[in-house]
Length: 426
Image (cartoon, rainbow, N blue to C red; front, side, top):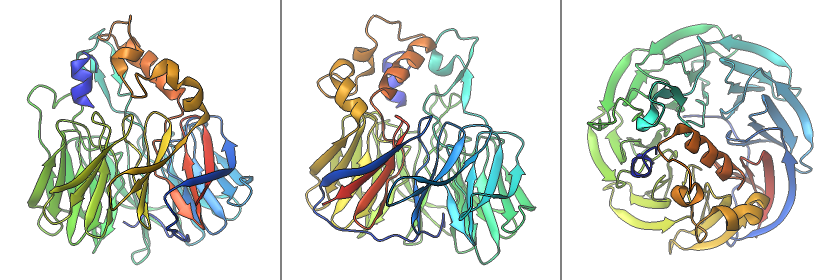
């Protein structure tokens, strides 16, 4: 993303999920239902028994019946719920921009406890990326997600990161703080638990490995600092993946990394041609799948070597973390598409388009592709106001930024149009 912005002068264990994956033919059937919330959806939905759980920018966390799409219950916070949930022991855990981590009874939606951090916020800077007016503080418009909690059933702890720069460990039953680990930046990545170690990234450009029982640092790995822009938001936004005793993650420095899980030493890194990587990677059959921002790609990388096996282009930024089911990868893009990709050939087999994309693509996209300069022609690209106006136009397409969930032959996904969709896979 940084490359595009500069060119335009502005520019664990998460949860216990009961779901059945399906192979299908990599094609979308009919829409079974969609549920409209009052705000954009960045939270990735979680299947739990007969419920689909997710948060919305309308300050509400929802539990919908998977069969009908009707609310079983909903829980109101005081700010957008951009974090994805985790479920354990009859509770669902999620974070809100009001600075709280909530524990809610998954059956009734009643509050069990909440924990207040020192406050949540978006990443930002004065004169972000050199935009005007340089004295104005500007929120990063691509800081979409909050840290999602990871549950440690053995030590009876739940872990999550915060905009106050700390990673917290709380007791599962009552939310009492056990320890906190400070970093030099906002933490909006999801902590991943593996062999009594928590792995997570921070906006200070470090990937951390911390003892899950004590909160003591084991090692940290620093991503590349761009000589001109490292002080202007070159942190880690993608959450890590643990596989084969390695940690895999992408960063805003334009690289995708594989580190030894025990030592933190670099095994390999892959250059994404200066494109941001915001997605949490997925692995299947020793192949790592991740998406890119500027170059609109879904990448397939050999887990052992980092060698590229294939790349497939979407039509816009890929911030939706991919899901593998059978021989198909499913992921969304910023133009309001959910794409189905055949693993063997790397070709797109089908596309689901949101109503917003169907209605507005012709007037917003350049030959079907996201092109920020084309979309904002006549406006000053050096002004932050142009960025805001351009993003608002993009949102009318119904971008799909969250990770889909699959169960019983149905794929569930949220959109920035405020809808949660349930679509049959065939």
